[in-house]
Image 1 (spheres, helix red, strand yellow):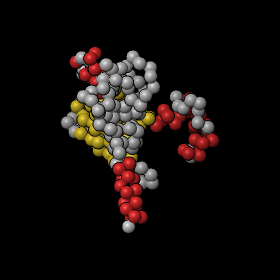
Image 2: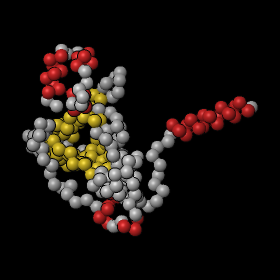
Image 3: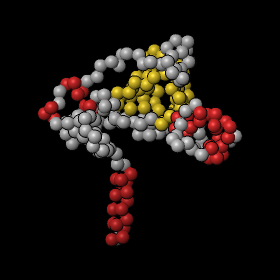
Length: 215
């Protein structure tokens, strides 16, 4: 009987740990104190007596991002550094601008699920399921369409039109993180060994060197 009780107690504890997530706020808000250099998991709270409306406000998300780059896209992120009042709320937002045929290249957000809404233009979007299936889930979106990218999975957005495209994305984290695959693999400092990359990508070293030189 005692062993049965111990087993159930351990099972309950394990389940509680498995279901744990970011804790809820213990106060009305924790406006980020941006000026501090203290290293914490998140951002230190500003004195609540010094908080005002501007700590919860941002202006300028209507301004198009500059897409004159190799990808033809620009992400304008609004996180706790831009709106200090977002701190501890577990949300953030971004505007993504695309020139004609611009791409937001394959990347992941290790700490957030993303929900994207197309405001203008046509976008092909997609994500890839994890190993071993590696199945591509993709769809063409038009203005007003919404698509969800699961947390941690590789995904992309591609403008399939001759005109600009604009989308807003919301995230389930105040700091989703972004890992752009090509930048990470081929732009690492110092470089990942060419021996490793030739085996991983099944190409010769000259191809690896050529790609690394672009980053």
